[in-house]
Length: 78
Image (cartoon, rainbow, N blue to C red):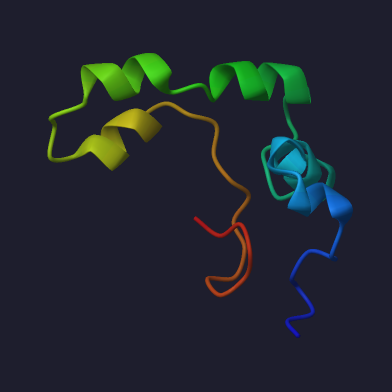
């Protein structure tokens, strides 16, 4: 088991809690309150605008608060 992996939690099994769980672990940007980070991270409008763009994945992430850098093989890595 990877010692840098987040500990197993019931929160991970309930997908609605995963973002908050990652925030609590410090795997997401914690310089903002979670509610603000969550609000800024919605990509629905960007997704509709970039629907046919070949660079869809990059377009919907432009300007979003970033993930905390972790080792490439650890959970939550960019």
